[in-house]
Amino acid sequence: MRTPHRCLVFVALLWGSAALSSAQNLLQNGTFDSGISPWEASDSVATFSPLDAGGDAASGSIRVTTISQAFTGVGVVSECIPVVAGATYQHRYDYLIEPVDGIHVTVSAQVDFYSDPTCSVVIPSGPGVGGEDSTLADGAWHASSDPIDLHKAPAGARGARLRLQVLKPLVNGSATAHFDNVVFAALDVIWLNNGRFQVTGSWSTAEASGRAHGAELTNDTGYLWFFDPNNVEVVIKVLDACDPFGRFWVFVGGLTNLEVDIVVTDLQTGQTKTYHNHRNAPFAPVQDTSTFAACL
Image 1: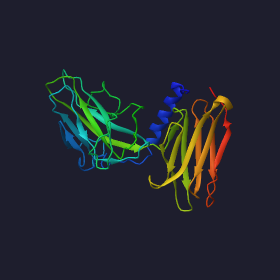
Image 2: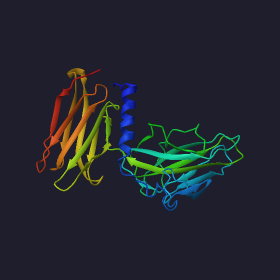
Image 3: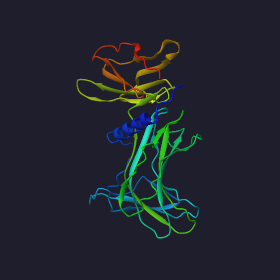
Image 4: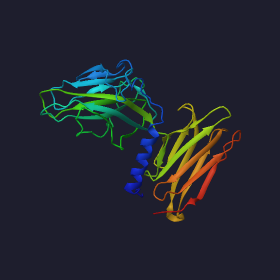
């Protein structure tokens, strides 16, 4: 199988970061306007702080002090967030680290996936760990900067928790950081064929419109939903038919009569094709075996 060029993958991740700013935040309280509930402390002390990343006097942040006697502190944990297996999620946050003499403090985030909607049975496939911001313990606000904070919900996943962590290298002593504007959102995009092809969708009726949500089924197949993750609207497959046909084939099947646009982009060449369905018309099957002819 072919692997996309690193630069193109990075472009895709930056696109995901931009999309996150407009995606629905699945957290109940990521801005800490009046308190820290339902966040829970774990090996730490968590309190409400009037310091707000945007300087809003009517809002604040969550102040986390690690009290762990180990080399790291866990921090705080979000509520159980409903997720869809195969969907891609991303997180971001603003942080402020209080300087401490002689202790190098860092912050990071981690996502744990669970097989039940109450987050009681963790999936042992391992967590998704975000990048650490390790050099900005200057008492000022900064945005989390890692563009690879993407988390694909594994098979069987129905819930997730986001952990915000304050880390310190010493057994003794404490470390404190503030977190604000925390977002955990589903990306409205599917990556197929080892990430080479990006698929997005949008829908509209006479009264409303919106972006489609997506999830992967296999390496080359995914699906989109509009209103409810249990209601599949479109199934799409981008098949590597380069050997022997010298093409990538796109097959799309719709279960809707809404107006729909499906956009498929080859991130390796930049080539894009839009597949359109007219409003109040049954979604016509797409069997495109000619558009994507760059088998690099």
